[in-house]
Image (cartoon, rainbow, N blue to C red; front, top):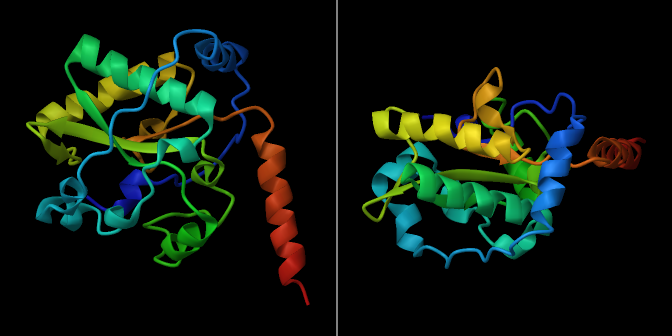
Length: 201
């Protein structure tokens, strides 16, 4: 599966204008504080099949503390429900992404990502690419029937938490979830304008 399956391909409607969805995420902040799981061993991300599927994964940032705290709690809630109700262990593939990394990925062409720096929710700590752990191994391929079912459940649970799931996009990104936090559209446009002005002669 191409790396493009794991990165946002469009950012139409930057903000989630559905009040109940945003309220759902906000409500998470009032409840139990979940703690991120311990980091997985680096070798998990260096298996031959994983490198073949996602050659850039080894250098991805998986530090939970780099992401928006409210978003982290929502993602951890999704992980907890996936395990408790559906039996799927989840893994974070990439969370925060630097603008420099976004530039490098964008340079690989539209099959990798169609957005530049500061136009991905990853740069704002509001997006996560996720996959499954089975028998201690990372499983990211949707060709596996168990994983296919898992992605569908993952999308349902994430949307119930008020998050946006990439599986509904035209170029589906099944492991991607993001929080279209209010105000992000203006912030992204301001960054884009600043970049355009800086590059103007």
